Each structure stands twice: as structure tokens, then as C-alpha cells.
Length: 86
Image (cartoon, rainbow, N blue to C red; front, side):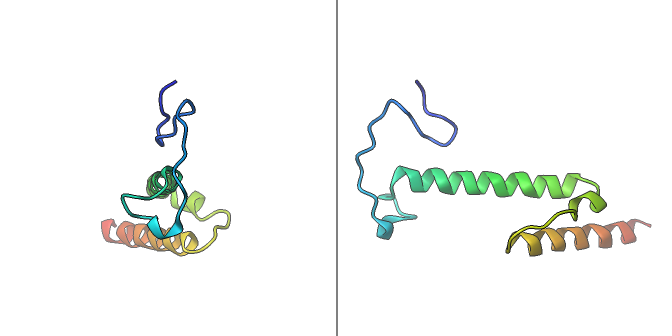
């Protein structure tokens, strides 16, 4: 079986020691890099959604920080851009 989009291959044996001091380095555990890639993909997906969804639907619901503040800033920028267009 081939690796998934995050680099996990269920047929591969992962024996590398997980050392937190190696995180964000070439020696980081593969799981750290999968988590990094997943987080970046999720942020990109959220940004696209916040930019493409109507403003009044974007602000529904609650989020944890820092995403709540980021989402609110994007909504504010979109509202300012709408005012400039008019």
C-alpha cells in the first residue's frame, strides 16, 4: 500500500525514536512532519473557506484562539473591501 497524502505508509515499520528536541528539524519523527503538514493544510482550507463563504455565514459559530481572531480580521478586511467597492 502506498503512503497517504501525509506520508504515512501502513506497510512501513517506523522505529525512529521520538525526541521532542528534534521537532522541526531534519531528524524529526515522521509523525511530527505529518502533523505539521496536516495543520498547514487545515489552515489553508479554513482561509479559503473564510474568503469564499458569505460574510454573515463565516462569523457563525465559535473557534479557539488564534483562529477566532484571524477569522474576525478576515471578516473585517472583507467588509472594508466591500465599502471601498461601493
